[in-house]
Structure formats: structure tokens, C-alpha cells
Image (tube, rainbow, N blue to C red; front, side, top):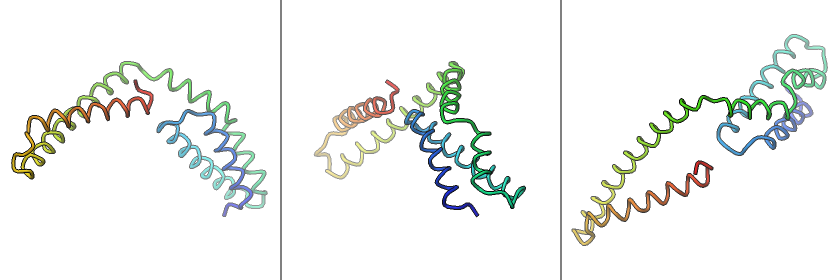
Length: 148
């Protein structure tokens, strides 16, 4: 079992590392993987050296992992070297699927609104209005995630 002091050392290391990484899903995944890796390595060291202090073992694990600065630097290098073609083809596919899904949702929502109101709301007008909202939402999300 990992002691409270050792857990605190792990969390301090994770916090220092996460401060150096951008605030995005990929970095969050990296932090989750890093936390899991540290716990797994520490548990392996504890099983191999049950008489050794956990403070010494966690320090060995953290030394093996590298400093938060080294991790952040490696993360930045990985992001830069990601193949541009793979990213662009994946992005085109993502946006095409998202566009088709938005169109289906807009048409269904417009039909439902037109049906519920017994034709008081024009179907075509509802499609246009909902599509405008979908486009605005798309731009807002892109701006928030830094994709614009």
C-alpha cells in the first residue's frame, strides 16, 4: 500500500508536470498515463524491495520518469512531429462526419418543431435558423479549443 507521503510526492510531481503542459485533452491523457505509469512502477519496486522505504523508491521512479520539464519538452516535440498529412486527413473526415450529423439533427429538429406547432413554424425557416445556430456553435467550440 502506498503511504500518504508517497502519494503526496506523486501528486506534487503530477501538478508540476501538468502546469507545464497545454490545457487540452491530449495533455490530460498524458497526465493520466503518467500517473498510472508512476503507480505501476512504484508498486513493482515495492514488490521487488519490500524492505526499502517508499520515499526512496518513489524518488527512483521519478528519476527514471524524468523531470516535469523534460516531459513537457518531449510532449512538445511529439506534437510538432505528428505527421501533417495524417492530421489533415483525419481532420477532414472528422469535420465531414460532424457536418452530416449536424444536418441530420437540424432537419429532424426542424421537422419536430414544425409538426408540434401544426405548421405554425415554417419547416424551411426552422432549418435555416437551426443551421445558423449550429454554425455559430461550431465556431465558438473551435475558438475555445484553439482550432481556429
